[in-house]
Image (tube, rainbow, N blue to C red; front, side, top):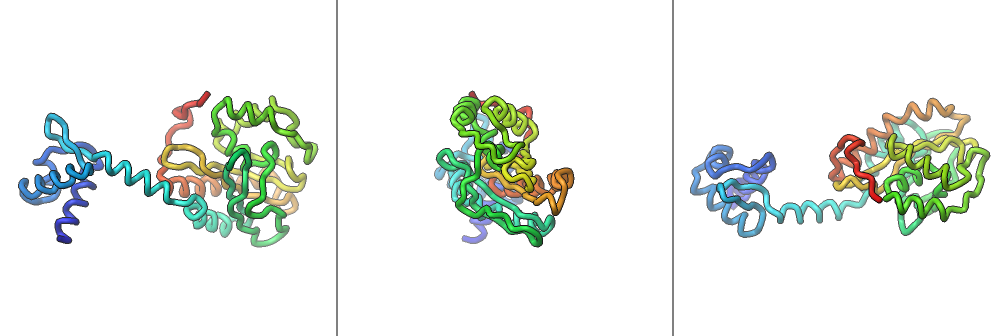
Length: 257
């Protein structure tokens, strides 16, 4: 029985590269065609494989169902945590994870800076939409109409002299974030804090969370915080890959109305 299961799994792996004939499958597994045919018939009965008019076998719809369920069961906080821990270790700075929930951007995880000032932020706290890098990343992924509606409904509280003050400027900022695939908060929420944030995507390419590095100006100047971006992106892309995301050119991302 174990050998049969192993062969069935090997057969599915062989089909991940594209459709194959019965002969090609048998050659790949190194077993007789009759054995492979029985496996294929069993797998096809359960929709794990299918075949076309030319009797070329390919992966079936059942696998898509299972893949979708597997990804849905992976909590973004759990998936991102080890990558963010490494980021926190490498930079020594405060790392946040935030998600967009029912109109609010909420911190869902936080790793404190190794040294220096501790930030007041905490898990469960809402992040201001117009003055934080994580919020910019999350909102930039929304459809144009949703971004416009949110921007027009924000109360533009001036936290510092650098805080974005109106909907037009905020929408322009979200366009820049969408194009650059990262966001900055240069003393916009707290005058003594600089922050960079990048998206974490799921298998569909949708942004499901934003991770950030926040640093007091007394620890690092703004340009040195920006220099941490490659390490941040490395962490967010690794987390995204664990959620099933595969990178594609920014130009290929469709703008939703």
